[in-house]
View (cartoon, helix red, strand yellow):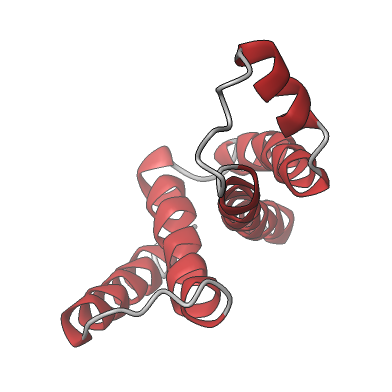
Length: 127
């Protein structure tokens, strides 16, 4: 049971981290607004030269077998809400606020709190 829970936990962290890294890469690569002006192949070459983007893609790739392993034990109706809700809570509450300077309204923070509460309720039913 603990191996599956550890796999799900790492999958959540890797997935959330990958999304953040993609956001950082997009902010850097798309900042000039002319990313695709030189054509699709040049854009792909530029994107693949970004260590931030590559690390994000690697974390997405590592997420898949971990989540797959966790699904061997947990119902998808339990694992998926934890994956999405947990990742969202990490992204919004930690990174968006502190690293990306994205400010949320009190209503949005209430929504984040409700999502976290929902993840806790779902996680308590894991068997």
